Length: 544
Image 1 (tube, one colour):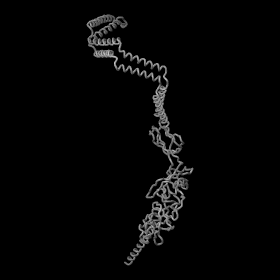
Image 2: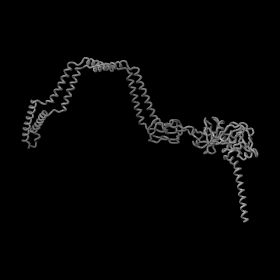
Image 3: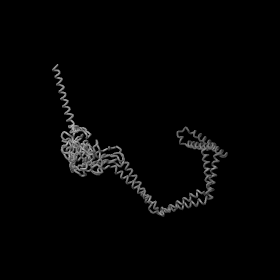
Image 4: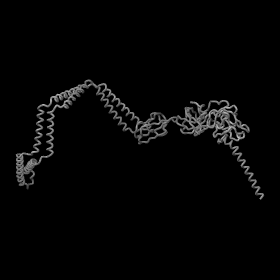
C-alpha cells in the first residue's frame, strides 16, 4: 500500500512539472516566438494598464527606416510587350494557311489566303459598270454628229406632219374605206347566218352527183383489168384515183354548205364588224382633244431632242454623269482592295504565337485568325507598396532574376507606373512595369516567373523607424508606443507617417535600435527589400 501511494505522489509531481514546462514554453515564450515567426497576437488596447500587464503582452522589434528605403523587390510574370491580332477585311473560305505557330515572319509575308472566286466576279462587275458610266459621260460631252442631227430633224418633221394630219381630220377616202370595211364585215356575218342559197345547193348537189357517176365508171374500168399484175401502172388505176379525189371534194363542199354555221366563225365575224364600226366612228369624230395633245407632245419631244443635240448637255447633266463615274471608280477600287485583302499578310515582323484558321473553314470579316508578337520585347509587371512608390521613377534601372533561368540576371528599366492603386488584404499596391533591355532574351519566355529588384536612391529622415501599426496608441492627444525597457513598458511619443498595412513609419528621438514595442504583426519586412510581399511584393524584415 505504501509503495502504491509513493507512485501516485511521484506521478502527480511529474504532471505538475510537465504542465509548468508546457506553460512556460508555449504561453510565455510562445508569444514572443510567434511574433518573430509572423503569427498574429493582439496588443493590449489600453494605456492605463500596469507595467506588469504590459510586459506580459507580445512585443515586436522596431526597424530602422533604412529597411524600407534600401531596395524594392517583387515578383511577377514575364509578358510580351505587345502583340498584333491579324484579321481579314473580307469574308470567305480559307484557301491556304502558309504559316504555323513559332514561325518568324517579315512585314508583308503571306500568312494565309481566302478563296477569291466571288471577289474576282465583284471586280469584273465593277469594271463593267465603270466602263458603262465612262461611255455615258463621253457620249454626253461629245458634240453631236451630222447624222445624229439629221435623224433628230427628220423625227421633228415627221412629228410636225403627224400633228398637221391630226388637225386636218380624216380624208373622204379614209371614211369611204372605213364604211366599205364595215359593210364587208356585216355581209360576211349575214352570209354565215343565212347559209347557201338554193341555187348554190343545187349546183353543189349536181357537182357531187357528176363526180359520183365518174367514180363508178372509173371503178368498172379498173375492175376489168384488176387481174393483171401491173394494174398499178395502168391508166385505169390513175383514172380511178382522180375520180375518187374529185368525188370526195364535191361531197365535202356539199356537206359543208348544208351544215350549220360554226359558232367560232360567227363570233369572229361579229368581232370584225364591231371593230370596223369603231374605226369608222373614230374617223367621223376625229380629231379628239387627246389625239391633238398626243401629237403636240410628240412635236415637243422632237424639238427638245434636236435642241439638246445642238446645245450640248447642261452643267447639271454633266455633273451627274461625272458623279456616277466617280462612284463607279470608288466601287472598283473597293473591289480591287477586297481582292487584295484575300491574301492576309504580316503587318510587321514578328513571331506567330497563335493561329485560329483551317483550310476550307469559312471566316467572317474582322475575326482574329493569326496573332503575331515580337518575342524579343518582354516586360515584367510587379506590385509595389505605396511607401516604396515615391522612390521609383520612369527609366529607373532594375535587375530581373527568372526562376527558370537560375543564376542569370537580366537588366531592365521602369517604363510605366500605374496612376491608380490596387488593394490586397488591406495592403495598397501600385502596378509597376519593367522592360527587359538585354540584347539576348532568346531563353526568356512569356509567362515565366521572375523577381525584379530596384535599388532605391533616397535616404530615410533622421530618427525614422518602422513600428507595427497596432503598437501606436493615443494618450492625451499624443501618439505613443509602449516600449519594453527592462522589466517595464514605458510610453514613448512618436509622430506617425505613412501607413503600409501592418507597419507605420514614425519619427521619434526617443526610440533606439533594438527597442521592442507592444504590438503584433503577421508579416515582416524582408531584410533585402521594401515593404512586404503581397501578390508579387516584398515585406518588412523581422527584428533581431
